[in-house]
Image 1 (cartoon, rainbow, N blue to C red):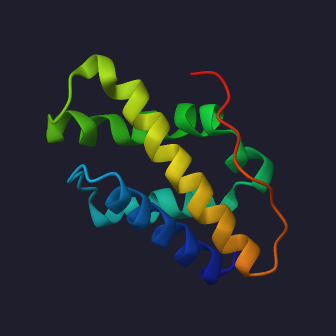
Image 2 (cartoon, rainbow, N blue to C red; image 1 turned 120 degrees about the vertical axis):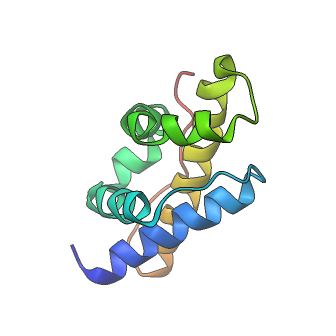
Length: 109
């Protein structure tokens, strides 16, 4: 994948984390890995927030627990909110770069 798409994916994750006001910190190495994974996903998979949550949960769950800002039973809701933000920001970024995409759909929670 082009370096620009990885950079855009990384920026989308950073922006999504900031938008949640959660103080969630992800190590640079993990952030880079997430960016590569997200850059490889087609728009249709990015739009499916439930599927995106399932994909990213194993990568982010430990960071959620380290933060300790919400109960473990809220992890699914927080993951969904984070993935919704990532999806929206990355798809908007791709649209700005000339790649067609639609609005993310929530899917089942």
